[in-house]
Length: 344
Image 1 (cartoon, rainbow, N blue to C red):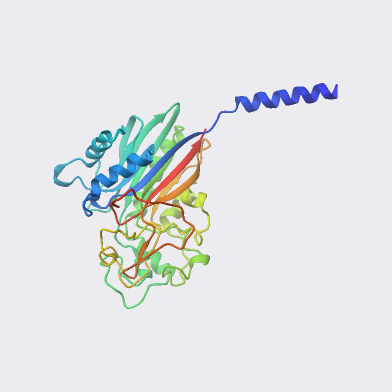
Image 2: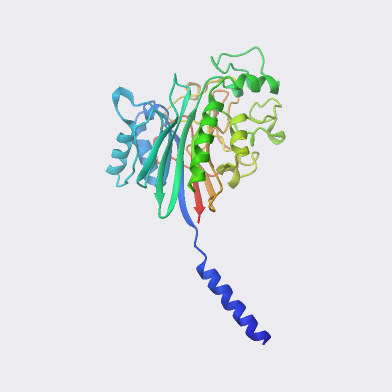
């Protein structure tokens, strides 16, 4: 009788295991394209080449300008089609988003106003799962993480001394519209999540992460001893969002994940930096998500050259970050973030 029970239990376990749904996968690419790739010769084609190589399900773009009355997202989807890749998009300013899956809806979540940043959303369905994909480019002004490094966060002129008082840093930082953009996103994302949609946001936040300015990093990259809970990522974490890069690589010491300022072989380093006598390396480009429906980041990499600009000099990485080297021309002064997800 005992042997029969064990046999039945084993058979039941096999049935349950066989019936369990296998995880599905998708990938996203967050990409600040530096004024549509116009700063670097061959930049536009390089953007298309990198997207075509990686074939992400969704691409979140920053610095979409629609120069000369063109529609950048139309042009980039046409360039991808010429490379054998079918993508969908819609007209947007400042930020853009591409999808390998047909778009069922789109919205302006935080509209462009005097270059203070934007947030856009698209909705798409993969199989029977709904996705709400957001792209963000947050306000570049009142950038007080530069003031910690001794440069004014609006003019980028050198200050008499670095700002290290946390209360004053946060007061000045709040003068930006980054927090308003995040609030608008969170309100919209809550509605999308309530419908069962999986929510992912990618963007250039122009603000560091609270996960990176810690006791362990207080003496790195000209933090000048500052330990601070930067508001944008803190608000997202409080709402349940996970930082994909930090899920995969929790330690900001071994894996700082710096995305700016990137070395670019086509530019002299002193033409890339905004703080020429400081170490302004930071991770300001993100992919974040709500871990609902089994959605989980399992792999992440930095796309771009292995090196940053430090005090107007090119410095190679000594971290354990995972890099994907560019195919050829690198179109931007940022590095991009490539993330792979599993979901059920």
